[in-house]
Image (cartoon, rainbow, N blue to C red):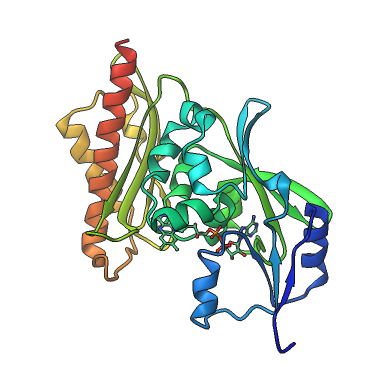
Length: 292
Ligand SMILES: Cc1cc2nc3c(=O)[nH]c(=O)nc-3n(C[C@H](O)[C@H](O)[C@H](O)COP(=O)(O)OP(=O)(O)OC[C@H]3O[C@@H](n4cnc5c(N)ncnc54)[C@H](O)[C@@H]3O)c2cc1C
C-alpha cells in the first residue's frame, strides 16, 4: 500500500475500464463523491486508488435512444429532475427526485449512477426505476452489457464501483394516460424517508388495468409489491380496496428496518400506509386523464 492514495482521471470509458481491470483490490470509482467521501472521511473506507470518472463525457446527459429515455450515469440530480424530456416521459421520476434531501449540494453534485450503485434502501431513485422496469448498461473490461436493473440488483457479484462502470440507465416512457405517485414519509427535517412507495398504473373504464408498485426504506431491500397486488386489477378504487392494499403491503415486510427513524413494527405498518396513499393518488390522476 502506498503512503498516499493514487488518483486516476481517465478520458474514455475504455481507459477507465482498463484501470479497473488492472487493479485487483483497493480501487474505487468516484462520481459525485457525496456518498463515498463521508465514508472515507469517517475512516470506514480507505481506497488505494480513486478512479474519477467525471471526464467521461459519454456518461453525461439525457437523450432519447430507440424509443427509450437514456440518462447518463454522470447526470446530476438537478439536471435529471429539471429536464423537459424526463418531465414529459417519466413524471414519476421527477416527482420522486424533487424530494431528494441534502439541498443544492446534493442536487448539483450527486449523480444518477452513484445513487443506483450505492443501492441504499432509503434512497428515492431506485424504487421508481424498478417500478418503471428500467434497464442499465454496464461496462466491465472490454464487455458492454445491457440488463434489467432488477437483475443487476439481485447479483451480489455485480462489481460496480470497483470492477465495472455503470454507463447509463434506460427507461421506457410512461403511458401518456398513466396514473403515478411517489410517497415519502419523512421524519421532520430528515433527508431520508422512513417509508417510501412508487406506483405507476393505468385505469380503463374506471377500473385498474395495470399496476406496478415498489416499496422502499422499510427493509434492507426494496420490495416489489406488484404481483401481490394483482387482486387490484379489474377493481375500482374504494376505501375497502385501499385497506386491502394497506394490509397486503404491510404483510410483505417480514424483516423491517428498526432505527432512529422508526422501529420495525411501525415501519411495517407505514409500508402499508404509503402504498395505499400512493395508489389512491395515482388512481385519481389516471381517472382524471381518462375523463379528458
Ligand atoms: C446529505 C445527503 C442527503 C441525501 N439525501 C438523499 C435522499 O433523500 N434521497 C436519495 O435518493 N439520495 C439521497 N442522497 C444520496 C445522493 O442522492 C446520491 O445517491 C449519492 O450521493 C451518491 O451519488 P454520487 O454521485 O455522490 O456517488 P459517489 O459518492 O461518487 O459514489 C457512490 C458509490 O457508487 C459508485 N459509483 C458511482 N458512480 C458509478 C458508476 N457510474 N459506475 C460504477 N460505480 C459508480 C462509487 O464507487 C461508490 O461506491 C443524499 C446524500 C447526501 C450527502
